[in-house]
Length: 517
Image 1 (tube, rainbow, N blue to C red):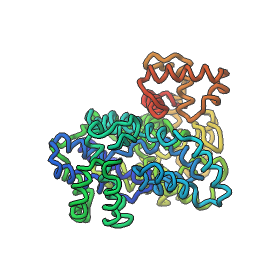
Image 2 (cartoon, rainbow, N blue to C red):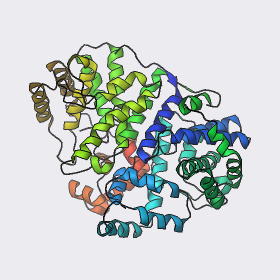
Image 3 (cartoon, rainbow, N blue to C red):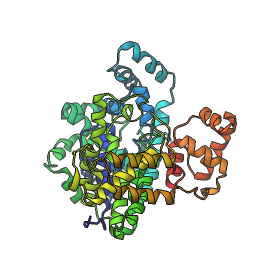
Image 4 (cartoon, rainbow, N blue to C red):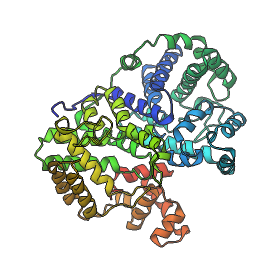
């Protein structure tokens, strides 16, 4: 583990996140990069200033950064596969309401028999605020994560209004015309042009843009994209990643080593929003891996690299449907194959980014085992260095101490016993397990109660439960309160934390370490 991450370009990190959001929304890889390319070309044609083009660049790459927030809810609505549903609905994101609703009914859970589709369709149609609620929370989550990535205020403000429309019928605020941030106006058209062109050809894309001109879309942006968009896409070439990196508007933004951990922690939280069962997992694994590395005698730089790999090790999870991750019963053979795919997807995202390449090998092999029984490569023995084994053991132990849909969290002592059973079975060695248990013994002592933003102890309890996806009624039952009292607590939490949705509150809890087992 001598190839350490030191510094790099902000664009590299945001491009990696763009690839991850492609996975999470069911789009072809590099959809976000191609959108960025079209957005930049349109910005040039519109004569936008360099500072505005920089905002457009990052908004195009990060527009769907909030996509993991309600994946579990979407999966329930869609019969299990949130990613396939998002992919099917993608062309309708900026459609007229009637058109979008008809398309929604045709595609909701359309792989299920009609009698099983009827219930979800009725529930969705009986909740007219569903779309507004979902997209508004995506916006707050994206803006909050972008702030932690070090994005400019203009980028964060644009992401906070990523689904506004030219005609004022968008979300979250219903802004119209020139009140909609210019980056949103440009990226909205460019994204839909790329999506329709790749699915149905440029003629179909032109028809859609023309139909929605002056409705969802800024007419000036539509005009330049319709005129030259096909030519711009053709000019992208065979390596979109390199082209987009080279096209970053000046000044080129850098991320220094001192700021890298904060940015990677934002990536971890983006990943862990995917399911209520995962929230806080990646940051917890990272802390445990660093401590275990130090206990095992690793150099400080190597332990730091191990922790950073822990922060991004599960980014590939976003490419697997929540019907798999949230399933309460046994997984089918096909579902297990999907689970085994997520380290490969992590590696695929990380290796495309020079800044994160030094972390890719560690992250991609956290499910490998010494006896060769792990995945996705099936490596064994000497092919698994100490760092890989430490990260794997830290991940395994931490997961055992977290709730999962098929079992409750294990007490630390039982989790330690089960990890030692893995040694007896030949899947880990005693070296990494002793180091992890040593580290876990230090962090498993009752922590000092943390109450950021002036939260009371009871508000911290409520926040931890709603961040795990509990309803107000479930929180009330767990804490022996009335649902009305829970509602009051949530109002106070939102005010103190400076958030307005559950997505924002959940990220606040994750940012302040309030979800540790």
